[in-house]
Each structure stands twice: as structure tokens, then as C-alpha cells.
Image (cartoon, rainbow, N blue to C red):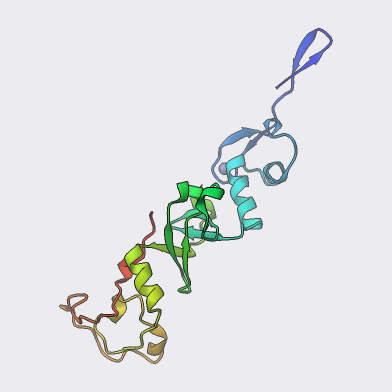
Length: 195
Ligand SMILES: [Zn+2]
């Protein structure tokens, strides 16, 4: 950065921080005007990228979902799509939060992959679903308590709470997943972490 003094050019000396997380070196002088990012950088010795994630932890966005270590902002479904600029070009996403809440949105904004240093504080909150699985769960959200079902540990509907006093039976090692042929069975591998 340069500033003019009479006829001469003088160079503002850099103030370098070495990020305590990723060890990147950055010149604080380049981050002007002051803001939350600069505050984190100078106070905590972090780079701008890590300061960005510290800010996300301190100020969670409304509609925040973390899926597969990626940070998304999920806005409500836009019913009149032509009037709104939408995230991910208006692609429809089907999301299941960890508590089972289902979300359909055509306005999802990806904020990037969370660095490993912040994964503890920004843990996954949800998964993506296919449209077929979303529709199945949306139309029939029931939780299953079939504690004798051999498919239960692979079924999204099964509530493990009913095994607090121990399992009702032991699933044979040679059991083939899905062979109970239960019409409500939804394999846990339907939970996706990538789009
Ligand atoms: Zn960093």
C-alpha cells in the first residue's frame, strides 16, 4: 500500500500475522476498514480465512445448516422464483435435519468448506436426501419401534430409545439388509453428505 508524501512515495510497512490455526501469513494493513474480520485477525492472530469462520461461529446465520463439513444458508422455498436471485441457481434441495425435521428449498447458498480447525464448533446439523426419500418421509414421517426387526439398525425410522434396557434380539451376522421387506424401511445410507 502506498501513500504520497510531497513528491516522494512512502511504503506503509506490513503488519504481519501468522495464523495460529493454519499458519498462513497475512498483512493486516490490507484489511481496511476495520471490522469484525480485522478484529479477530489482530486480537487472535488468525488469517482472514480463519477469521471468517470465527465470525460464522460467533454470529450464526439464520437458516444455517452444516452438511458434510460444508456450511450452507438455507432460505425458505421461493414460490415466485423469477422475482428473487436464488442460491445455487434455484436448484431444489431436500434436507433432513438431525432431529428429523424436513426442509425443501430452492434457495440454498453454500458458504464453503469448514476448515478442520473449526469442525468441532461447526458440526454437521443435517443431510441431503433424494427427492424420492424426502417424499417418502414427508408423506409418512412415523418413527418405528419394531425392536425385533432385523433391519432396524439400518433403518432411518428406527428409534433406538426403545433399546435403553438392551436389545430385544441379536441380528444374525448373515442377515441381508432390507430383506425384512418392510414397506416403511428407509436405509440410513439415503442420508447424503454431498449434493
Ligand atoms: Zn488461518
